[in-house]
Amino acid sequence: MTPPPPPPPPADPSAGRGRRPAGGPSGGPSAAAFAGVGIQLGLTLTLFALLGRWLDARLGTSPWLLLVCVFVGASAGFYSIYRRVIGGGRGTRPGRPSGGPPAGPSA
Image: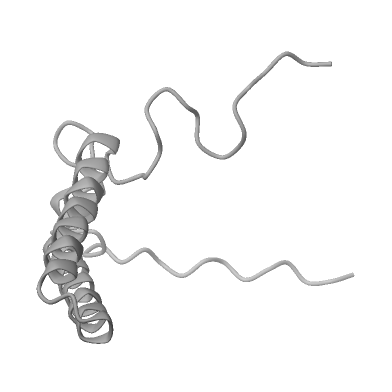
């Protein structure tokens, strides 16, 4: 016969103090879920601006592709922020369950 497993260590009474629940007060995502939004927007704009500058130098179309790429980057960044705020940071589209294809008639 095998001996019984050892008992679990005693619980630390200070564990969990000062911690907040993962969600916000209304059960939605907390502020920490949105902490990287500014960095993401800045990086998106910077990368698209560098792409536009490189394309302008390559094709001789200065400054038009730089301007187009900056506007595309800003649009993509703001759309990403919109999705996070409306979708609660999950990246799912409204009305569609996450984790699989849309439900259809079963065969």
